[in-house]
Length: 367
Figure 1 (cartoon, rainbow, N blue to C red):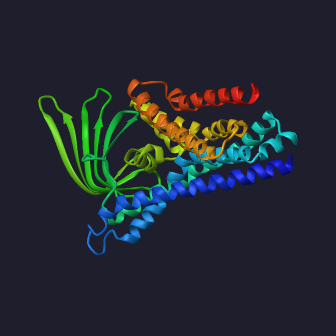
Figure 2 (cartoon, rainbow, N blue to C red):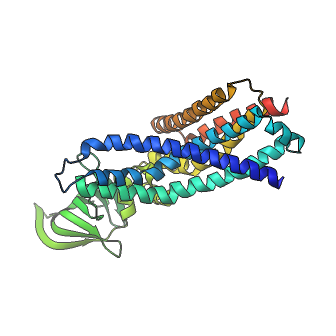
């Protein structure tokens, strides 16, 4: 069995690597074409072709995370179908490789791809994507969402705050900050705005050239006090990671950052449906590699005619694309219909698990 496992693992790893490199090269080309219109817009010292190449290269880990399950499916289907076409799998079956042993062998290999997918999606891709965004913002502008930036809310013991961050620059500093303070009765207590701010070592925000207005009511009149400060320290639990989550795509963030941001939204009475779906997708998505190897196993039990291998590999490509599309569609529908986040994220994997086990039972066990 050790020799058989070594043969299968070696062939599958080589095929998956080949498919992944092919897809990544294609996405690299598409991303580079998208970046070409931005080259030279900021002048000769701005965004150039070398910066575009670095930016596109930093997006590769994110694409690898998205493509790994599909590459596992296509690569495993190719190996299993080729074994069947050349009658190698028939020899392996006569050597003692039964259906359940074959499934266990592929599941062990699939578990290694699960670990790889999780590591890339939770550690490599978020760091690379953040570096790419900061690199691009250094030469083309700041990171922002629309015209108003990101809004965050926080409750403190005696007041609540609505905070607006216009953008982040390449050094991680915030721009165009506005802080609105309300008391427990919902009345506005103060407003603070500053052109720039940075995150302090103790977690507080340090606003520079801040303008603060405090509102109070007397016996027969309202009082407004204005003040200007070179530096204003605002204690808050809104961290740099939370601001990044609000300004960057949630699917590019680490699982722990999403979890902390969801807790922050729940604690402040804000909807977290979108971020909960993304959190559970990051939990379940690596497990889809196990589904893909099980889905590829029945191809080893098919009988091929001349030229049939390409058709089955093409079917594997279509199944992988359909899984990718279904995963995205369920995310949007679940957000619109307010489905349970964990069920929305797990549904595509469950559907394909039933399909793969049904194919295994019909093509392998029944025959």
